[in-house]
Amino acid sequence: MGFREPSLHQFISLVVMFFSFFIIFAFIAKSLPFLGNGFSDGGGGNSSVSMDALAPVMTLPSEIRATDISSIKAFAESAKISAIPSTYISLKEPHHAEVADELSAQIPVIDLSLLLSDDPQLHAQAVQDLARACEEWGFFMVINHGIPESLMDEVMSLTEKFHNMSVEEKAEFADKGVSTPIRCGTSFNPKAENVHYWRDYLKVITHPGWAFPHKPEGFNDVAKEYCRVTKNVARKLLEGISESLGLEANAIAKATDFDTGLQVFIANLYPPCPQPELALGMPPHSDHGLLALLIQNGVGGLQINHKGKWVNVNPLPKSILVNTADQLEVASNGRYKSILHRAALNNKETRVSLLIANGPNLENVVAPIPELLEKEEAVFRAMRYKEYFELQQKNKLDGKACVDHIRINPTH
Ligand SMILES: O=C(O)CCC(=O)C(=O)O
Ligand SMILES: [Fe+2]
Image 1 (cartoon, rainbow, N blue to C red):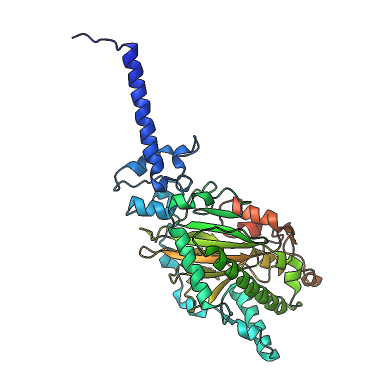
Image 2: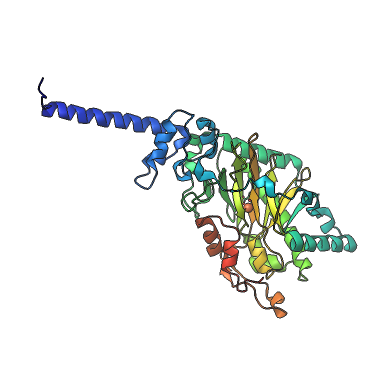
């Protein structure tokens, strides 16, 4: 039997069939929720990711990158993997091996009602407590803060509802860059990282001005109230911190234009992770801004670095957790160092944390407070907060690299 050359007609049919098959295949891949916009990622994306995701669930999509998915929650739920992709391995040593649990109970507690007390002695004691908390820890829990429990519960429950919406419902909020007021995405900065983080986020610039997702119902109003009262608490704490540095209560707020300052609402969701000892929800980093106030859904995971040791944070009921951030380190001329912290994971429960970052006005040129420089040399060079904010958000999250970038004297 001789080989017969295919006719031109047969050849064209074959090509058409091949392309039809490819288009149907691409369409199916695109409609899988966890693939987000990965398939249409012209050239730059990793197309083997989409292939892997279509393979039976037992196959580990070991090379999956956060640039190819829009949500780790959706990915984890649909892929049903028992091991994490290699691109999510952050830790060589299991993280629980190096946690100093005996230090958890020593995390300072600040009673805001004492700081605001008319009794000069109670107030002075609270200022002293704040000085110690900022100097020795850079982190504290605030109790008697005056924020209603019902408001905290409501904002947390709506934050969970937001994250539980489908990938399609959240698509309109997808991260389109630092200057957009509402940004929803996964990991920290997938394009800039080699290792990714087991986290989905919603970040909203809530001050100055107001923009917020219009769903789920009620989220906008509850979040607005929560942001307002949180900024007040941050303002009061900043006054106490100014006093603790021997400055006028208003000094830091005035120098940084705090009242017109940037506020960012950051809602993090960490789904259960099949290998929580190898991955992280967020890597070690310090926050930009002055003070960041955090609450969580009752599931732990935040770890702070105290004198080189990782310490689990177990919040007192209804307390607010406060991080001292980079611009406070700058304003205090290195006296109050921003806290290095990270988010650890677990394999059972979804963790949700809500962080409200409060910082200077974006146009403010942040520098050490002049009064502090009467007796000491400047440890930091001045930098416009907008540039600092962009520097931090546009790169990978890397310890205290940003604040080190403006440090004049590396020994501080
Ligand atoms: O989820 C946490 O406990 C930490 C979150 C955090 O550090 C951040 O959003 O900057
Ligand atoms: Fe943080």
